[in-house]
Length: 86
Image (tube, rainbow, N blue to C red; front, side):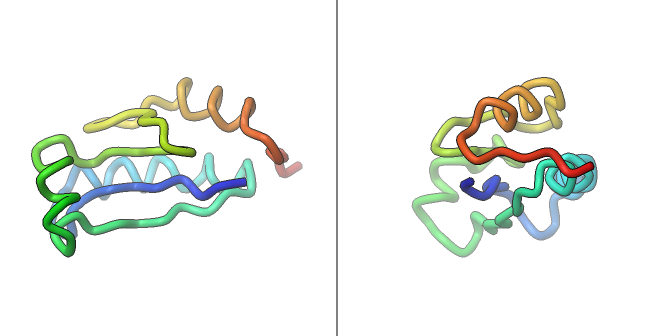
């Protein structure tokens, strides 16, 4: 399964909040979270600038600003290779 990609900024409190809420879900499904700081890449900064945090799975944006737990769980359940930890 692909990793959840979380685009954000080091100083962004919304990014920290979304990641904190996402970590238990990722652990439950056995999926990694790949943190990507948009400030290290001008193309990503231009793309996501004021939208961060942005959560993406397999190229599909699942949510930005706030965690949409239902959408994330649905995407993980339908993703190939998904397993839920007991």
